[in-house]
Length: 185
Ligand code: AMP
Image (cartoon, rainbow, N blue to C red; front, side, top):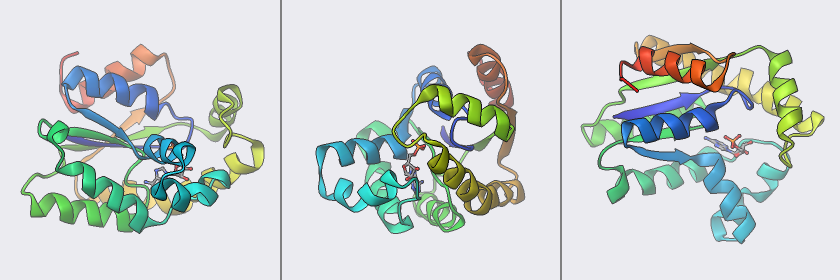
């Protein structure tokens, strides 16, 4: 199965994507996690991403796409994968489509986490990651509305979008996702 998770920062994508990927026996790939690790290790990818991560800005599309394209053909992706936090812009979604078409492996579903801003602020303040200060949160939420919401519209047009109410316990949200994607947990 090939799935992507889309949603604003703090919506619970990280937690749910680990659970869903494990339930389906597919590889979980968080572009944010890969970029943060690369940044901490000071690799060339990390050096390119650093200023964007520090300021809560999206990393340029070509950097993220290169990172994803490298992973798609890895042996751990043969059974499928769940991308967490990718695609985040329309060009990323279009390039992902092309990469999948070239391989004859279409996307099975895009899951959109729906949640209000007040709840997001509350959750992000609790999480306390280094890019979770008030200014950066507002910047990331603005970017989400401007750049990532069009990705949800794109998948709506392609009839692959699953809208999930992301407010509830971890188990409740997980159950909604598994029902919507049609797998038994
Ligand atoms: P996340 O862990 O998904 O919240 O991502 C953390 C940070 O990594 C984001 O604020 C961006 O700077 C960067 N990032 C992660 N995924 C992407 C992506 N698909 N496109 C651009 N930047 C990304």
